[in-house]
Image (cartoon, rainbow, N blue to C red):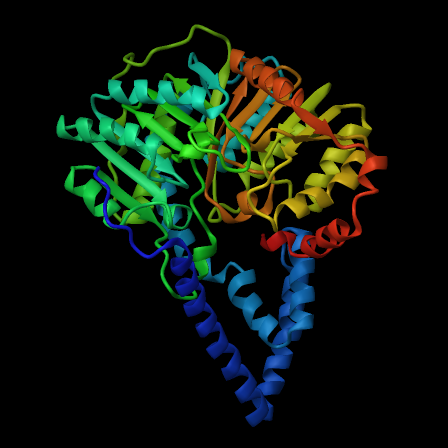
Length: 513
């Protein structure tokens, strides 16, 4: 695609959007203040509402960290805090969307019915592995598959040639879904293939998150793609309004080719992810390719999101590959795609992480760009280490968000004090989201160790058991670890007071970051 005239410059898009939202919030707050001063009765009602909201927050199920932070907010800023909690802290604004997504999920599970019936996890020698697989099936809806080939790539630039190779092979369809789709050298190479395939009659579809890509595309980008026969759906378009769903973004990374091959992992479509440009030092990332029947699960995942955005029903059977046409890998391993999001109250992404931590026997190694832990995850990590499990976590030395990294670092003291080894990746920014445990289980995907991934974002990943990719993930983490600086408690506690203060203050906002 030729370069088009840019739209608003990067700062002005955000400034205008922020100004419009603040203007509406200011109007909202002014109305409350005026009504409170002019009408004592209304003011009394609002005060009572604050008490009710505190009681509601206290008695509702859910994460204790969320509840505590909201209660403090309500008590500090009555009655505004109570009204803010009513709209943002409860699930009321998402009720309609949950009903809509539930209908789509029912159709998706029906499309996977034969896969679920064929899925046989009795061959897993580990009872805990079978429980983890059953948990993902029951909470996310996607079954485990055997006979699939897995190829793990790290860093991101090692995965990119394979991605281009698979796109070139497409004969029926190409599905692409990313949080960030940025124009640049990486996109240009992908786009040239997509444009060619669309002209050949291949069904090419793209989903990207508008917030993640807002300042990374030229004006007319989507219109230009559609003129080339490429179908595009934009998730949650940014608008200057107090839209409560704006806090929920599509953070998934999915590529599916003909239902035969699928890719997921940490990489987005942007030049820094394959180190064509430098941002925050060297960018460490990863991807995994799944060849075989499990790729269809990712196709269903994509089509469900497509239906959710476009509000159009999808015939999933049209996208199932011809039986026996997919390559198979004659191994004993299992792969199980899964997804999660704010409309799923069962939290499969967080749940599978907790399953792995709680049932590790020898070791569990974790990499995550963000480490914003609630009490539940912190307790699980500390208990695992306390029981003799070798728990190690890698986070970045360089960061991409100044207000998030101090919260990550605020957890170091408690983690290290409880026997967990924490490392910072010194060459730059590590964006890989990986778990590996006991040389038998691994996960690769888009899910960070933070509140956003666990509660606010749409996410995806693949759980891998007893497969060669588990060793690839383990070896990759060990190689990354050799380039890290380990956090030592005595040295860490001598860090500057300003750093400690920043970490202390920002941690209070952890559930909202």
